[in-house]
Length: 201
Image (tube, rainbow, N blue to C red):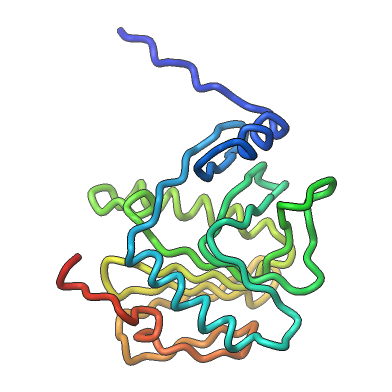
């Protein structure tokens, strides 16, 4: 029987020191460092479409919108990660002792990629996505979560309705409008997929 190599575990301090010098983004999951893959053009387009909508709607309001490279610390899950899109209320709350890591998003959106959506193993995919959502729910300020599929028109939407209670909706029709409750914002599903040509996917 071939022995499996032992997974190296890092302290938070070791991870942060390595991350500053790294050319790529890496997640920190309870001691493990996980490289984050680069995005496709469609992934970037969908992310940009959502950010453009949020920026236009929230201009002049007490929020800040972040995309891709902003690090988030979730102490309750011992997790550092980089969501595709985050909205944070002002004033920003930073991790104690750091100026580059936030802790108080109220809205998070992820554009699903092959690394997070493995069509050959739906059970594994569901588990990974569920674990991320469990981690996000440990954030006291977190109220709304959007998952956008980049390979077909499919959007999953979670809204916190009470303590320990979330409402789930999903959309496959581009003509349908979803409501981001926290911002009182209406978004037609087609707006999220502007410029995306599924015939080439």
